Image 1: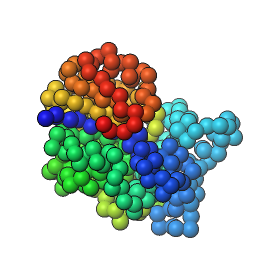
Image 2: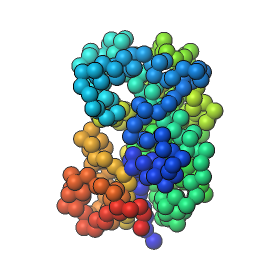
Image 3: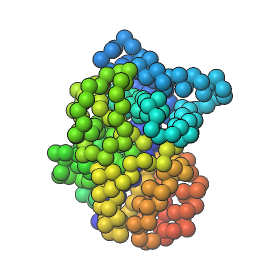
Image 4: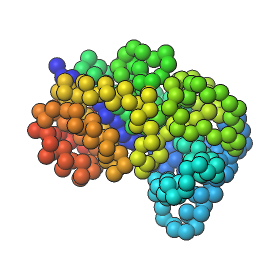
Length: 311
C-alpha cells in the first residue's frame, strides 16, 4: 500500500472544466477577467465597477500594450504595487481590490461548479480508489474543487489554521482560499471598499457558502506571479512543518497541474526537498513544464508523467 501526497495546481480546475464541458464553457479558470460577475449585494452591478482602482489599472495596461493574457495583467499590476512605497493608501486600496476580486470571482466559479454533478470525473474516481492511501494534500488553488472531490469520495478533511476544522485528511492552502476570512477583525465592509485590511497574520474562520458572495473583511489571496507574502503566517507555517514531517514517509507524491512559475518555486522546491530520492514522483500534466520535469528527473529515481489524467 502506498502513502500518497497530492500537490494540486491550477490544472485541476482546468481538467474539471474540460470534463464538464460545455457546462463551464464561459468559466475558463485562466481568464477570470472575462467572467460575468456581479458585486456582492448589488446584483445589477458588475464586480469590476465596484473595484474602480483595479478596473482603471486594467484599462491603462490594455491601452499601453495589447494582447496581454489575464495573468500578464495581474503581473503588470503586481509590478506597479512593488514600485510603490508600502504605507500608501491608494497602493493598499489597489492591492486589496485585486485580492478581493480573485476571492469573489473564484467564489462565483465555485458556486457554478457546485451546481453540477461531477460523478465520473477521472480525478474523483482516482481519489475514491486511493482514499485509504492518501496522506495529505497541498493545494495552491483558491477554489474548493479538491475539497469537493474529497467530500464526494466520502473523505473528511481539515485545513490548517481554520477554526473548528480539526479532523480528517490535512489540507494546506498556502495561497489562500475563497472560504477563508480573518477571525479577529470586525469592521464594516462594502464594495467599493472604504476600509482596507491586508496581510494580517490572524486565525481564520471558514465562510459558509451563503457568505461567499458577501463582502469579506480580508482576502488573503496570493496573486498570480507573486512571491507569497504570507508563507510565514500562523495558518500556513504549521502546514509546511507538517509536510516536512511526513514527506520522508511518502512512497508516492503526485504533482497535479502545476505551472512551476518562478514565484512558486521556493514553495514547490521546499515540498520536493522533504521527499526521499526513491519516492515515486508523478507529474500529472498534459504539458509538463520542462524546467520542472528535468529537475525532478535529476533528483528522483522513479518519475512518471500522467498526460491524460490519473492512471
